[in-house]
Structures are given as structure tokens and as C-alpha cells.
Image (tube, rainbow, N blue to C red; front, top):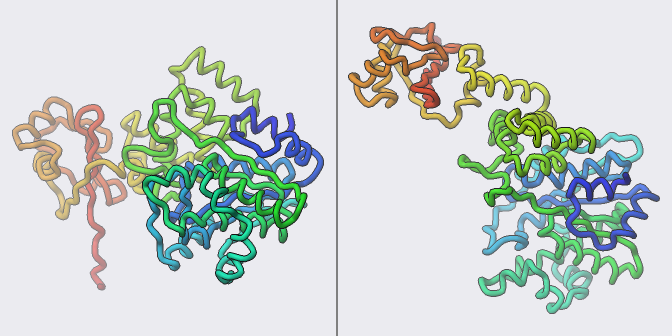
Length: 426
């Protein structure tokens, strides 16, 4: 199937401005396309991933993607999909976030591809030097207030209020499209479905300034979850692409816990598996859902894509260790990932009676209860059951000298941390 047909099969097409014209263009020419990413945080999150990977699909089909970092528009704030005014961030903050996002985008696109290398641009390069008179005459003159008021991003904010700053956002994004059309021959803009109004504003500006110029817009559905909860959110927060904000283990766990009702759709969105491979997993899901083969494949494919092969192996090791209770074989780095959100306690001293540590760390409420927990076999140290009420925890119980993992019952984990020894020379 052709590229547009594949995107439609994968459910990645929400709207197009001219489907037949776009299909013809994609089949006959090497097309330059772009998608914008405003730096509203110091990392992209998995809500951006479907759009990023769609750009990658275009490149694999021979087209040339431009990832546009919104160094200028990030200073303004896009009202699309927002119920209230965004908080304006300092220029230095946006510059730092822009650099981080540029680095992240670089992981997914090929900048040395023969014939169609990807590019990264920052719209501050052309919007920053633009004076207000020139902008109002060359861009603002082409937009009536009536046209702008009709856009969903503005309509949804009429009652609660919208500043002139955010009201003008669509004109800045429209100018991006015009600028890339002129300098890069960019004929297509893609984005999430909430960007439809901004994309069509760009097409309108190109039409008015370039006559019968042919450019196109395509939007991707915003990813949802079948249970009604927000995609990309967990109890501990947003799932980020930055491994320092969301560890590869947490990332892997998010995908492996995907609902049966969502998993095939996510395989189409977020992996590069073929139609035949995904259909085989769909059949296995129907016949043996308890094996969770589709979820395992999804978690492995996306984790490897975002964090690499070694991070995937590490995430699988942590998952298997937690499932089996075989904690002792984990490295300190893996323990930090796997037990990031469990209660922790810093033990400053040396050897310590197990009973005393259970009380100090809040694992058992009293020494009497601690003794009962130990005698009843409810206490595990680094995966091994200890039933000796007189047990002393020594350096041998410290994994890499840094951690002891204590489990009470089947699932309640606690992490004992040990401070690093000070260098006697200091």
C-alpha cells in the first residue's frame, strides 16, 4: 500500500486538506514536510511520540522531514486545547528547553540519509528578528478578525478569555509554514488534531501570498485510552522521553500494562511492525489474552526505539527480578530504577539487628510486630526469606554497598539506602 494508505490503516490520519491531491503528490514527488514542537517543558513526552514517528515514516518512504523547534512560539503559548492562559516562561528557560528538545528529536530522524536527510530548525531564527510593523503589514494584514475568531482554539476560550498574545499565535505558526515553504520548498505540515486551525491558517497565508501555490495539511488523532484516563499519564505523573525524568523501567512498565482494548491500536501507532505481524498479534490476543504477547511486543519495541537495546534489556531484567523476587542479581543502577517510588529509609550506622531496622524504617509498627513478621515468614531481604528474629544485617546484605531491599508480605517493598563513605583524605 502507498504511504497515505498505510497511515490510514494505522489510524494515523485524522484530517487532510486534500486527500487525493496529497496522495498524488506523495506518490509522484519527494515531499518536504514539517512538524512543530514548542518547548513547554525540558523534555518531550509520549504524547508527542505518534507525531514524531509519523515523521519518521515519511522519511522511510523517501520524503524529507523538518522538525521545527518553537523557540519563538514557545515564548508566546499555543491556546490550542487549553482552557486557560499558559504561563509565560523566561527566554533563557525556553532556550534551554529548545536545546533539550532538539537533542531528543535527533534520536528519531536520520540527518545523513542519502537524498532525503532530515533537518532541525528553530523558528526563533526568523521570528526573533522580525519587527512588529513588518509582521503586522506582511502577515497580520492577511488575517481578518472574523477568520481568527472562527477557529476552535479561539472559540473555546471566548467565555474564559484569551489574551492578544495567544490570539496571535496562529499567525506566527502560519508564518512558519510560509517561511519553510519559501526557503525549504516545504509542501506539507503535519500535527496533532488540535493543530488543525493553525495548519489551515498557514495554508491560507501561503494561498494569499503565493497565489495558486499547492500546499497541504494532515493531522494525527490525539491518542486516547479506552478506559477514559489520559494517555501518557500514570499515578506518578507524565511519561517523558527523557530517561532522567522517566526511567526506562518505568517507560517499559507503562507500555506492558496497556489495556487489551488499546494494545493493537498502539502497536499500529507506535511501532514499525508490518500489517501481517500486527494482525498475528491481534489474533493471539483474541485466542490467548492471558499471555499478553501483544503488550510484551509493544513494550519491547517502543522501549528499544526510544531508549535503546541495552536499556530494554535492563528494564526486562528489573521486571523479571521483581516478579520472581530474585533481587540479589540486580545492579545498584537497576535497583534505583525499579524501586524509585517505593518507601525508602537511610541507615547511617553499620551492622543492625533486623528487628530494629524494621521498626526504624517503618516497615513494622513495633518490635513485637517485627518479631511476628519475621517468625511468620513475611520478611524477605534481597529476595531471601529471613525467619531468624536474632538476624543481624551486615555489609553482606548491602547490594553494591548501597542498598538493601526488604519485602514485607507479597508486594510491599522498602528500600534501605546507605550513605557513601567519606574519603578519609578529605
